[in-house]
Length: 122
Image 1 (tube, helix red, strand yellow):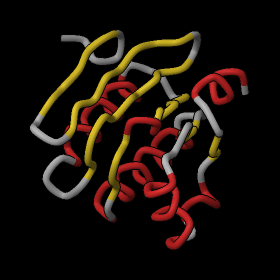
Image 2 (cartoon, rainbow, N blue to C red):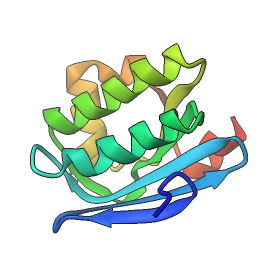
Image 3 (cartoon, helix red, strand yellow):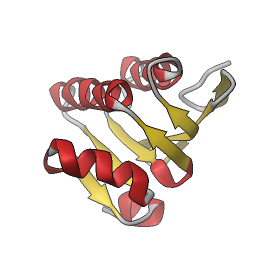
Image 4 (spheres, helix red, strand yellow):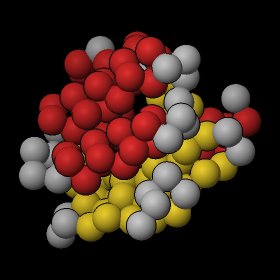
């Protein structure tokens, strides 16, 4: 399945949905992003970049948990997207996920939006 257009992957606690919206790839992780599920997010992000979609919008509104491994996946995608002339935009973070970004200082290196709609309009 071509994840950069429409698709999903699932491994128990995390499902990842991907679709195109204008010039952005919208990647929606649903569930828990941790050491055991990180590749389910890493692979679609890398697939999008490989297909030339350098503006990645990660809709975090249904992400229930994110540990340091998940954070590192997003940081790695940010570096690759910026090298390709794009970036990673985070949208709709739940407080428990936003806290991880806050305490690590990672919120300073991402463009963070209150909602998916705001991220797409930017």
